[in-house]
Amino acid sequence: MNWLEIAKKYEKEYIEITKKLLQIPTVLEKYTPENKQAPFGVEIKKALDYMLDLGKNDGFSVKNIDNYAGHIEIGSGDEVLGVLGHLDVVPAGGKWDNPPFSAFEEDGKIYARGAMDDKGPTIAAYIAMKMIKDHGIKLNKKVRLILGCDEESGMRGIVRYLEKESMPDLGFAPDAEFPLIYAEKGIYAFTYKGRATDKLIESLESGDRFNVVPDKCVAKLSENKEKEFNKFLKDHKISGEIKDNEYIVYGKNAHAAWPHLGVNAISLMVKFLIKQTNNPFINMLNKYLTNDYLGKKLDIDVTDKEMDELTLNLAFIHYDGKDVEIGINIRYPKNYDFEAGETKIIKAGKEFALNYHKNSDSKPHYVSPEDNLVKELHEAYIKYTNDTESKIMSIGGGTYSRILKKAVAFGPALPGDTDLAHQPNEHLKIDDMITAIAIYAEGIVRLAGE
Image (cartoon, rainbow, N blue to C red; front, side, top):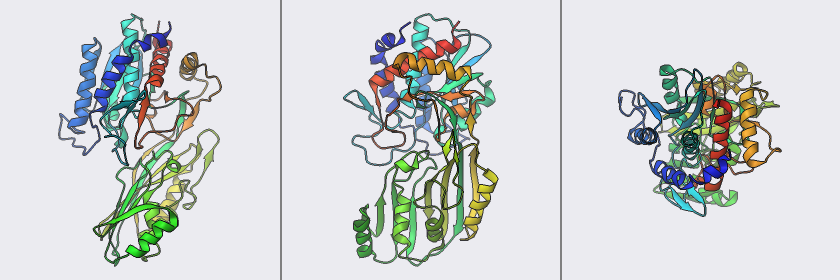
């Protein structure tokens, strides 16, 4: 069956339902577990309802798991193939050419936060399942499109889902790149906390998520440093401004898994402040964390032949003149000595009277390239791209596939595409998503068809 020709007939439907989903601003503002109806907020709940209603109206079996997650199901059998998507998105930072939740369409592209991470791909998987259903393809496994509500800030949605539902026997997450991701680095987040007073710095703010390179840093200063600041901006060709005694520098957002693609605003500000004041946490940032996305300053850099190098993202800083909190996100390969690295990290904080607090640690995820799951999905990709040159890979990003014992990340970005996740003007290419729909349909039938 030629799924690509079939997918082209669903293009209008894909665009319509994708744009509606993208127009819901599903940024987590606050997790409120006591709010049983909307623990992740009303907008994320609205998106979950939208998807489950869509599935129900199209004749699928649907289920809502405590408003933390849900699934849309076809097929039958004892085994379950899970297709894992998420409805939440990171904040729409940076400068956008159009409103980030407008789902602006132009030149075969749809621009919106979540277009590629992960609403557009989730709808592609949904359309793939609908094509299979509409064409009467018999499946010997249950196929569940699992819709998580909290992938970007803790994965509490999918954790709750797996507390209530059995873990799928195998699966894939349409939330990365083609041809296929068989391994994901460990994801480790921690903070340094302490107290400090400073004659110059009244407050310092930047960033709000572990998994985003911060693009703006704001320092409120007690003294007029306009001359020095403007010279600094000019000498280093940095974008910035002064507003109401607030000194602002601008960097560039990027996904924390690829911090080298961004410009870290905290690093830029520290480069200025280190010459203006003798402050312990500024000195600590300068010595151990700024301008170093490989962890070399902390002496934790390491490289694995399959998973590549460890990466570090200086994610946020909050200082109110008394208390300081610094957030760091590390993506580490399977050969990283976690305990030895943690000892070095703790020691670096103590040197400047900062206390270490471990936030989370998700261990590296790995499925053998020789596994049938990997081989069948790779063949599905090759069938509709004729690309036999691009290699399956390991990434630093974290997808829902790491939650299952046997799952991989699978598309939809094509080899050579610029990474758009967590960046301004995030967008999907409609033609590429139609190809992804065909690949997903082929992959599902290969894994779950009779």
